[in-house]
Amino acid sequence: MSLKATHDLHRRRFGRNLGVGLALAAFIVLVFGLTIVKMSNADRVMPAATEAAD
Image: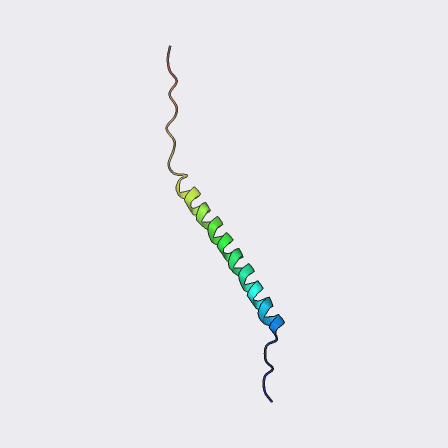
């Protein structure tokens, strides 16, 4: 008993699912990277603006 060959529909579906999965993974990495950058800049406090005395 041999295994059936993969139908063309399944190959195309796999390719589409792989593309969607990679796009989702790229989005997650982007959000994670932005979060890390935002959190690392949180400890840098902007100097208070001094008011000009007239």
